[in-house]
Image (tube, rainbow, N blue to C red; front, side, top):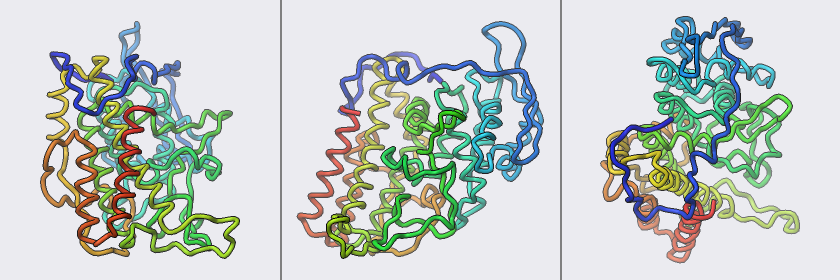
Length: 397
């Protein structure tokens, strides 16, 4: 995927790193695609004939009418992409999505299919196992693929829709035993902890993007996918909005000292040495990492020419950004599903430099700490840990 534009800008603001080798080129590893065949999508018994324009290296893959119809039928799209928890069925999503050259508006239509297949059915509705499975299938299908122009916004909406799952770090690989974690498997332990995250909605299935099974070519590399999406200004705005909305959502559910209200101290001190702020602190650092990653990709793409006009890119991002997100002034104990987090109403327009990720994070954090009367020492600790994580993402990752 490449952005259009005229002049290459050297302005990368303060969010830069020392990578001068071209991030986009290092991340991409192309692999041959099986084209011109018909595939049966087992999960929904949907037959999707796949075809390409015949000919030379300049040919593009043409989306057939039978697949195009899925864009207007989210339920059918979910059936078509859901592997039903079986890695053997991931190939159907790859046959539909893993194309780097797509004719006409086909890539944008594929984005609508992805969005519809993985989106919850409405406000307050948790994701089903089929929708979570479809999200894993999409991420796996796009592993190591250079996205065709037009597909990125739909895929970004999918990651925003599954913002909690897409944000987990790879350190949890050994906890994921399959593509999806079913709602009945999501339980707090005796310490009020679950590896999937904090403040999870009841009855929601979770995509285990960290799960990998090499023998079946099952791998969903979210870091790679975000790096690819960050080239597109609309996709960048969607991902950035989702992280800022998640920050407001997360902060307003913490205790007044920034802890997890579900935490229960363990009597076995030799086994558990965490406290109520341990995992919330990790979560906030991870969130700052993700915002720092976006700014890192932006700076790197400006340097290597993938983004030829940074000012135009930034203006487009701002035009697609929904606004600012502020936490409630009092602690909330509701547990909305992930889709509602991403669709959170804005609190007003963005103030200041949108591309100063540190400023945007700290504006929210500092207002939360002031309104909730967070002890000053604790507020400084949270701020410093998030700052460290943001800078590490820019320079070291």
